[in-house]
Length: 314
Image (cartoon, rainbow, N blue to C red; front, side, top):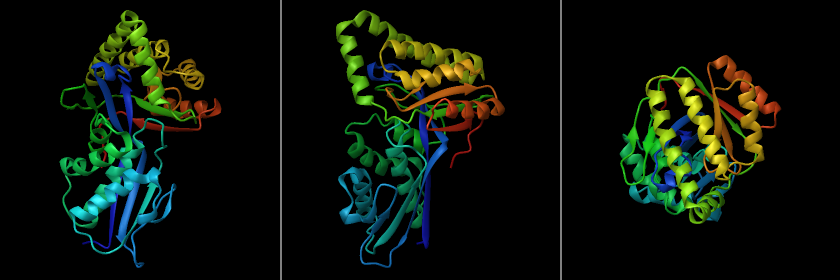
């Protein structure tokens, strides 16, 4: 056993397919190393295990209910590996919570990797997912598994209900800028409202959902063929449908419009919508960095940038 174990996990971005994925259409998600979570674990001199994070600092046994996904995971690791001595876990995060960037899955992946590192055990994705999926069930009830699978892997995934995740390569000459509106996303309400639209206007809503699915498939082709302009066009068209479905809001629309006015190749919301984050495609790093500043000046709470070239994730 090492003195200190360390684990890292990136956040995740849903590039295409939000909401349509609920109705059996495909979605694309990928690890986003612009944000991340690092966990360290070591033996604790005290007589019980401790957690240190921005949400809570104190004994494992007294952690609040809001951290149940973390505590359930830690007890699971204790049981699985028969850890009998107290430990000290430190969780440091730059993944904003409730913004659709996979914060809960990233925490679980980083904790699990830290324990495997501490115990000097090899950790493949299957091993990590065994633990992470349990924590995700606590966090989300009945998760699709796309957050955990994306964050514990290194490649983009095409996800469709009832089918296996399909990893594919990301090697595009472009940069993705992510901007946080500063408002929590309202995924559950947005999903419920789209379901209501499906009930009251099935023909038009169903058409838009199918169009979103088609655009996701076109976006995957654009990525595979290294065609940033085509991907940007798919993003713009997807945003029009998402807006029509009522999943955008003023804060998102404002940042998306700002990005497009300032020469982004494409821009749309990411995740559940009604707050949370938007994404914009920039043709190179220089224009991406410039776009970050423009979006901050326009009211974004925070921004991140990542190249869409060959991945070098841990």
